[in-house]
Length: 500
Image (tube, rainbow, N blue to C red; front, side, top):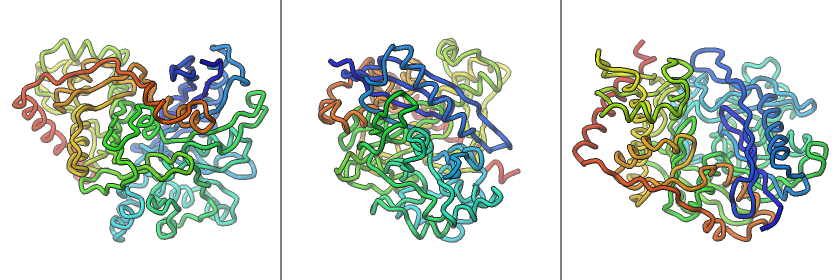
């Protein structure tokens, strides 16, 4: 082992984190800074880009200070980020022209309807592997250009830059020297052809997005630049970039075709590695770029995106105020023998895969006088497992691959009740790794590979260790009955906004 480290910057939806990884792949220090969530209107979600940057930089400085690690010991920086969140800034001043529009934001739902009505859904899927949805960056870019005074003229003159959060961080880290994204993040914009690996002119035209607004697309594992010396006292190579879910897939050592992971964070995201084969979904899943290692071919994945998972537990705490902390939910769920017939569909911002209903809304159904906060807490946890079941079923239908196990990570993966219920509903083992910092680990591994900190992906695979395996313990009849209840609840949540 050496005294050198890789620094992972993990910029998430609710906080910015910085994690140091040593040569054995273990976290040697963690710092975290939360930042403000902005809700200007129902269904709209924004972040302050300047606060994203300051919170991320502060977290990086704090983890170095806490671990007593000098900048000279950092071999490289890897970046992973909340995907699809959209920032446009002025190239000369470096100042954003508006708040970041967050991946959860539904303000462009009507624009998506227009694109579908224009017959662009098959074009979008064929080129980008995505469905038309307000989730992705493309319509957010159009909204900013259309609604910020003067933005479209400035964009046409080449004076503005668009980026997902990785690009925004890299711009600031390099002192405005690099306007770059990687293939995994580019594949989430609804503007990028995942077959050719180029920006798609037809879709740029359909959304009236000038090409000079776009970042350069670089490999996920390669040295793409250096930090400005003033930030850390020396220039540090930036050598890894991946969207958070692709980074988690890499961090879970799911580097072979047919391997899958599920991340339980703000949302819930399941990815199945399909190697160099692009599998087109027939079940409303997404085909996405997993990563590109240096000069190697593009690697692909099937993805199911659940918009609200851990965020439902946050709502119990901050909205309903029936819990003081997320950790309480395990004991509450275990204090009742079952859900009491209560189902919770957390469609606060619509439903993601496999439904893609942007007009669905949150629903709690099956309440009786005997229902208590314990039943609601249990139903919230169960909803995460049911949504994962929906995605995994669709994934098997598309790929023909039936998983032998599911690797899990993210904050809610530490909830033993949820993991056991997940195994019960899926009917396969659920495996939690010893290191659940898989998203940041993936960013660190990608950066470390690029600078020779680790020699190859095979050695990284040997660093992955399982902590606990949850075996299914539910009868088929009980599983089917619960799933049928879930499906009935989902149907009652759908198209709610239109129904009003």
